[in-house]
Amino acid sequence: MIKYLDLKAINRPYESAANEVLHSGWYLQGEATSRFERHYADYIGTRHCVGVANGLDALTLILRAYKEQGILYDGDEVIVPANTYIASILAITENNLTPVLVEPDVSTLQIDDSLIEQVITHRTRAIMIVHLYGRCAYTDRIGNLCRQYGLLLIEDNAQAHGCTYVSPASPPSQQKKTGALGHAAAHSFYPSKNLGAFGDAGAVTTDDDKLAAVIRSIANYGSSRKYVFDYIGRNSRIDELQAAILDAKLPDLDAANCRRKEIADIYINKVDNPQITVPKCGRNSVWHVFPVFCEHRDILRQYLLDNGVETQIHYPIPPHRQHCYPQWNHISLPITEHIHARELSIPCNQAMTKEEADLIVSLLNSFRV
Image (cartoon, rainbow, N blue to C red; front, side, top):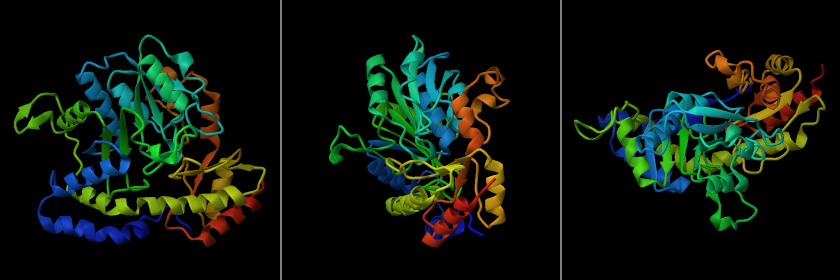
């Protein structure tokens, strides 16, 4: 069986980092957390990294901190891609803000920057881009729109650790990593992510000193000094175990992403089946997910499983069709719906061998309905 993601194999080299924390006797807000925050900020290229409990909290805390500073208010609009994991939207609605859903570009699967300007209103305050599947969603056009209209640019970087934005207008020395492209970025370190913890964990990266301080305080019960509470806070802190594991994994992230790209290149260059569509190129992607698209997705998934290949679906139901948002259930977003009805994620990670990738190619090329 070719697993979709063999976490036991990926995590085995880092068990010693977990054991060190277990034997230290210090499990929260210690040196491991400070060290990881410092190293991850340096890696991303921002002044600050604030470790939090998970990726959803990271997004939610960014928006909450802007509200505490009087930059965002109830009812303000946040433009967000329609095809995303629901966490992107949950963070917006939890803060009593209004999501404005924008369809993706079918060729990139990212928010269509040509559709953004037409939905900007006098209540628009931010654009949230989501680096879905590990591919950079940022474009110079999006950056220009944020500057033109005075909008915040917030990155959902839950799926793109280590991804770099390659601008045709900038030399390599000026290229930036996702997580450093906007005003603030949220990161998830869920175990299956390219940089994954042994449980839930997340972080916010930003160059904004005040924003970082407010987020850190809100996430610590609203306190920046012991028993003094400036905000109605919450408990959302990364623990020492996860921080130590992530810090141990961080130096290997680029190599792991390179291996993912090698596997992805095999699929891009070798899959040849008119019933299956694969991404056209891997530029600006770290391949958290390698999506293929098929009209007969469920049949294809069962065929691969019958032949010893595990797959996943990201995601079977788009946010606007979920029961938790009944006000959107009648909306037609045909490109988003097309993607969600046909997407199938095949194995693509650093634990795979070339032989496994070639076998998957052979199965995909042999598939017929």
